[in-house]
Image (cartoon, rainbow, N blue to C red; front, side, top):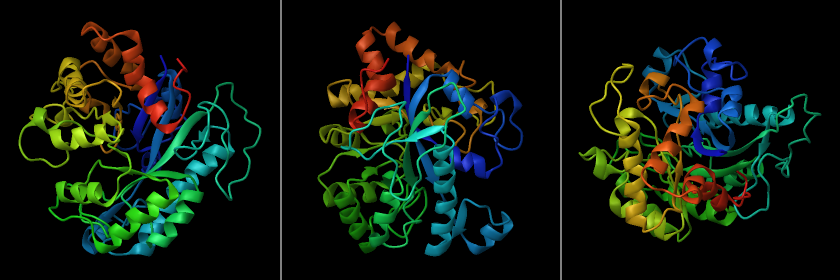
Length: 363
């Protein structure tokens, strides 16, 4: 079975010093034990993914205390955010030039998975590929729009390969309020929505505050995705990191797709991060998938958005999962619940592939 994973912070992990060309067993540094590297993704048969440009705004004091990490910038520093985002963009471009990945074209532009697609403007054709495996198809998702210095500059990012943008991360950004805030889109954010729509760049709802998401729905009629979000109804409380039933219904109505996040306390609250003995079951995990389907009224609007190692470790995954190649456990639970092979294939691959215009028939 081939998988499409809609959320992996690969460039961020590289910024932290992870050797993404090595097996997970040999990874050193932070966020260990590891669940994902490029060889692991191939072993797991992840044929396509959204790889993020993840940047984090910090106060000047926090930025200095963290020793000015490459993925971060000081709040309000548009140039600093741009530099942080550019470093990650260039990594993906280097992987493409090495033949490790194929850059996914924008939604609506024909392109096939696991094959060379039209390179973004300014990116040279890849060198001869020294690997036996086909390249993984990677779409670039900007997680927090702050690296876009101005709405007009969005054109440059789109030309360089960015096909989806989340207006904010967890905190307040220049364009929108994230899930730890109560603010909505800023005036600059509304201008950026219009610019992104004109470029055909897809909006990602994950990490937006409720008000920002409501403002986004009002500002654009276009499809919206949630690359790595679960259901608020199943985790209780008022945590805006999870989607309300109303948001799930609206994303489904627009033809968007919601990606299942595998972080254990996003599946059920109360599980201790970092503790390998404190994990929810695979059945609890799939409850989120079926809840989305029940609201949507069909099984075409849900897929995977694992967030493997995105600030967490393999200890923070559901019970029985230790690495990317354990994704088959999700498919097995769906089959146990009576899902047909076509529906399981839809969750694993075809729903996301169809949305992005890839070949949904690849198995």
